[in-house]
Length: 206
Image (cartoon, rainbow, N blue to C red; front, side, top):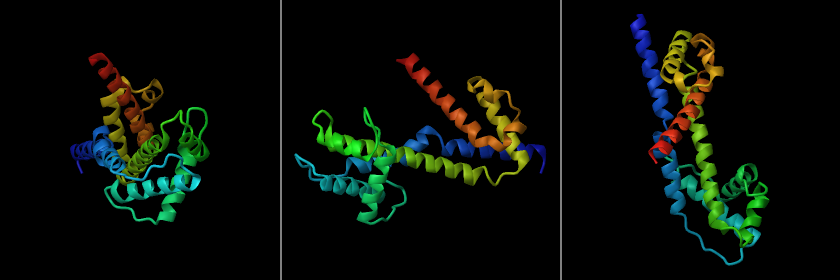
């Protein structure tokens, strides 16, 4: 393989990785599907929701998202969906003053909050975040792990050249060879920098 062929391979691989984790791609491939599924979820609202009612609704919501919110349908039982819903809230739900499953249930009972609709909306956001992370990790594992050392170095060089003005000094002080085994961390730094650039651009435009 010539040097040109190697550079071309690295450029194509870098392009593929960046396309698979591009913000617009993530929205179309993950967020939009989950949002549409969440919007299509129907349940019978009760004026006063018991603990059992709450479990049934959040379990049904998780079951519905698994069936309609992912590109590949994920089968699970109602019991599994309820367990996943409770676990999801316990690990990830953040209220104004505290966090966890009990916090979510108490907020449903408190008239000052927006009831079960707010909880389901937050659950959808949590699912989107987790699904994005799984997808990005899959991209790194499937696209970066099999690469040889020279290709990794070339990809690191390509990424540094493209994003050098926006990368933190702690990243820019390393050479491509030093970053070759840390491409996911380099790309995550780029994604963070890109997010800040987008916010600045939108602020300037507004």
